Image 1 (cartoon, one colour):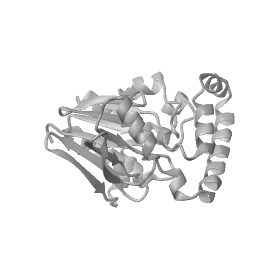
Image 2 (cartoon, helix red, strand yellow; image 1 turned 90 degrees about the horizontal axis):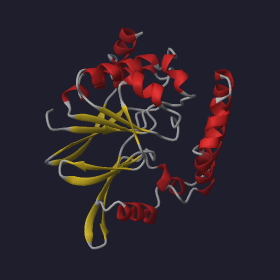
Image 3 (tube, helix red, strand yellow; image 1 turned 180 degrees about the vertical axis):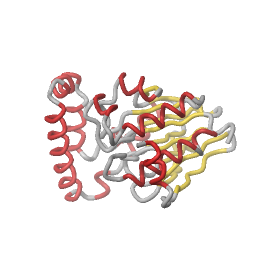
Length: 255
């Protein structure tokens, strides 16, 4: 649809969920190809050991699908999430995408809009914020990337198990965004509109910010179905993309 910008996040793509990978590839072939641009706001992948993953069998169809889309003329912008924060220049080149800083301010159809993954807004979850600071430290990343691929995969599997246990023990509201953090970052970047993912709680939030109406759109995850925000000059619409048996056809075609 000409004049339309698309936003997605939290796909958590991996070999264990081939139907979702198929749904994403179908989305790239059809919906995204007809848009002006696609923004992926973090956690495209379930995990990312480093850019050696570009050549791994479970991720190769995704990288190729993105490259086909960008070669066809649709720009794709990818923001790091908490699961794939080690995406770097080799991924950028192989997929033909552009990596975005978090946050990024965008003039979106005439409206200044802030784009974020969203995890930095979950300031009530102090345990997670400590871990977040650790893994985003360049020194930590350098040491981690110097390890073998097998060792990195073992470490990430361990982190994922710890995360599952920790998440199960926390109250849901602790893992949601903090409203004061939301308002602070919107003031800092002089915007009245914010788009983010991470919390897996798709919804539009309307509130008052310094006497003016403000809007925050939370993108949905792709666990049970797809979720895409479509934005044009008329406004924005958050849609669901149902999984179908045909989803697997795109995985098999790319394999």
